[in-house]
Image 1 (cartoon, rainbow, N blue to C red):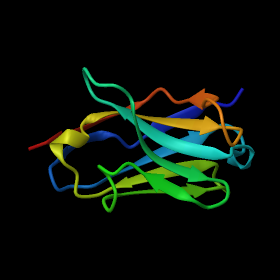
Image 2 (tube, rainbow, N blue to C red; image 1 turned 90 degrees about the vertical axis):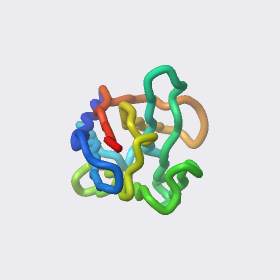
Image 3 (spheres, rainbow, N blue to C red; image 1 turned 60 degrees about the vertical axis):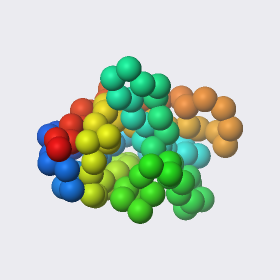
Length: 118
């Protein structure tokens, strides 16, 4: 059973930066895709960014140009660099991993809170 553990959340002022980390207990080579999701209070969970094992990345329109997802296969870790943060980025951020090209995500982290003050 693979475990995903997020870290790096916190409180930051608008315009600031944070880097989230997602450490996997096993090799992330096994995963076709690793993604970051977020969920704000009263809102549905939103896909923020995805990194595939083929090297492709995708972003939600709301974070394009501000967030960058990257993966370090040697450290079995995925990162989300968040710059120019806005109050509307406030949410719990979750890391997720998917084994196959299609289908549901197989593993989820416990989440890390990001709060952006205005």
